[in-house]
Image (cartoon, rainbow, N blue to C red; front, side, top):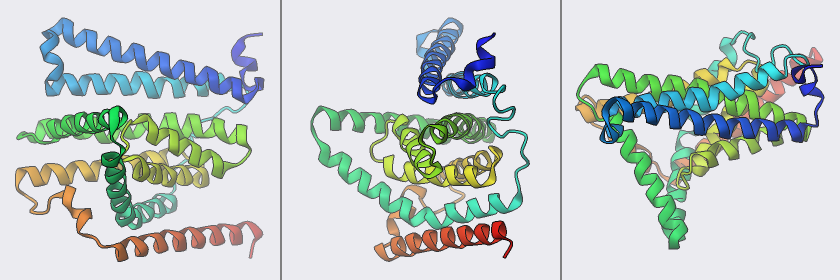
Length: 296
C-alpha cells in the first residue's frame, strides 16, 4: 500500500514532523536555487537589485510555503479530500467580519508594536543585537521594494508582498499547520494560537512579534469559522496591500501622513477602545453562530 494512502493514519505528531522536514527542505532548496539563478544571470552583486529581491522572494515563498502545503493536502487526500478547504466558497460575511476585526485591531496592534520595540531595545547583549539587526535588514528590504519611483515596479512589489505572501503563508500556516495542530490538540483555539505564535516567530522580528501574533490569530479564527482558506488569504492580502500602498503613496508625496508614525499618535484610550471592540465583536459573532446552530 502506498504511503499516501495511509499517511492520514499516522500519529499526528509524526505527521507534523514530516511536514516540518518538508518545509525546511523546500524552503532551503527553493531559496538556494533562486539565489543561484540570480548569481548565474547577473553576478553576486545583482542579489541586491529590486528585481532579484522580488524573484528570490517569490520563488522562496512558492517553493518553501505553498508547495509543502500542497504536498500535505495531497498526502492527506485519502483521509480528507479537501484538507486545505480550497474548494469551499469564500462567503462575504466572514470576509467582512475579518475586515472589521483588522480595523478594530489597528490601535492595539500599534500599541503592541511599541511595546515590542521597547522590549527589543531593553534586551541588550548579543541576542538583542541579533534581533535589532534582523529588524533593520527587513526594514531596509521593504523600504527598497516600496520606495520606488515607478508605478510598474511598485505593482510588482505589491504583488509579491501582498498577493504572493498572502496566498503562500496562509496555505502553510493556516491550511497546513493549523489543521495539523487542531488534530493533535483536539482544540481549535489552542491550534489557532500555537500556529499564530509559530507564524510570528518565523519572521524573526521581536518588535513585531506580538502584533503579528494577534493578526495571525485573527486570520486563524476567520479560517476556522469560515471553513475556507481563501478568507484568510483575502484578509492577509488586504492587510499587506494597504500597508504597501500607504508606504508608497507617502514616499511619492501623494499622502502627507507617515504610516510609520500614524499609530504612534494614538493614545492608550484608543488601545482600550480597540481591545473592547474586539472582545465585543468576538462575543457577538460567537453568540450569533451559537443561535444559528441551535435554531433559535
